[in-house]
Amino acid sequence: MYSNQTPSEDANAAYTHALQWYLTKDSRYAKKAIQIMDAWSAVITKHTGSNAPLQTGFAGANFSRAAELIKHTYTGWTRAGRFAGKLRTVYLPTVIAGMPNNQGNWELIMTDAAIGIAVHLDDRASFDRAVTTWRGRLPAYIYLKTDGSLPKAPPNSKHDTKAEIIEYWHGQTKFVNGLTQETCRDFGHTGWGLAAISHVAETARHQGVDLYATAKHRLRFAMEFHARLQLGATVPSWLCGGKVTPGLGPNLEVGYNALHQRFGYDMPHAEKWVKQKRPVGASRFLAWETLTHAKNPR
Image 1 (spheres, rainbow, N blue to C red):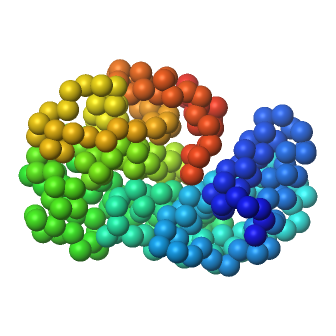
Image 2: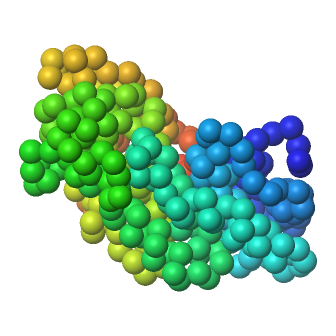
């Protein structure tokens, strides 16, 4: 092991140093990012435990961002091939497989890692597979009334009857625009799901694939729906038995920038919440998104 930190904490550290290198051109930061990635690539063989797929997603998302940034802006990473090999053999097989029967944030975070790793490896087949997983999970995570009386089932999921879908949506029986599969679980995990949806769309956008065209309405309704309640709006009696668990967290920055800055949607509740949570720090698969995305037209 490289340190007493978790892989996701060291992935965040590597990405942080890679960003510092990019912004300052001080090579000490690039060397530190490389040191962290080299240390992990020397020892990592797998993630273990019941949360292993999620932990692989957490770490893989920011390790791939760090590696991609260093790859294209710094020369002299002699063990880059070893790190890329571990992304291919340790991380990618787990995250690309998806988890259609788990809570939606798991598969979305894993897909965030999968698409980032695919880009770093120049692996078009894995990129396309990650996009396919995202397209299938999106309507199974965020409901729109155009879906019909019930939310969509995740592709290849065991949750495919009316009773199973209602149970999967934590007992919710009334569905409205922007409700998510985890709304009645808690807003913390819901925020992760929304962030991961946005991350995948951002990565795809830089590769010339427009996923926001597919996600924009679901995402903007979901962000406004949850931000409004997080900011203190009365919870209606039909929603989650009249009680929700707040904790939306700093998870809306990327999606808000895309939908408001680029598409021009008015999102007053999301805007208020995003501004309250700035600046976004680093945690799990999130890192410095106010720095990288706030008012970013690109």
